[in-house]
Image (cartoon, rainbow, N blue to C red; front, top):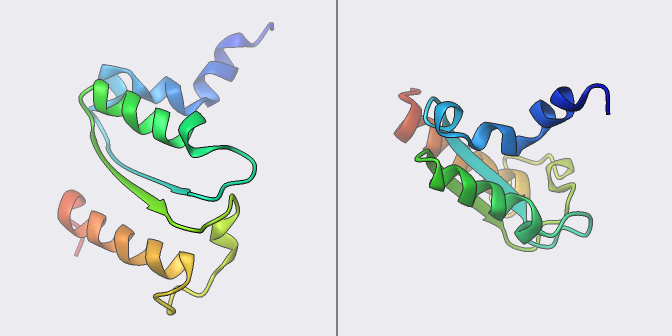
Length: 100
């Protein structure tokens, strides 16, 4: 409890303030079959709070993906979770971040 501020700053919700959220363009991804953290309890709530704060938010709910979906590292396979995410990430970077 002595370092309460550090715990708060480590939480994604800390960045959902109007001052912080508007400075960043957000891509929030989660596995829809997350066995550890139900999407409604964390990822969807976080994206909603960012939207309320006026941030530009895009979401990527990965159908069938578990909590550790990024372990499926075959980005070349468009059927893999990483392959689906890679495509969405690239689209986000090009469209919203000026990446080429």
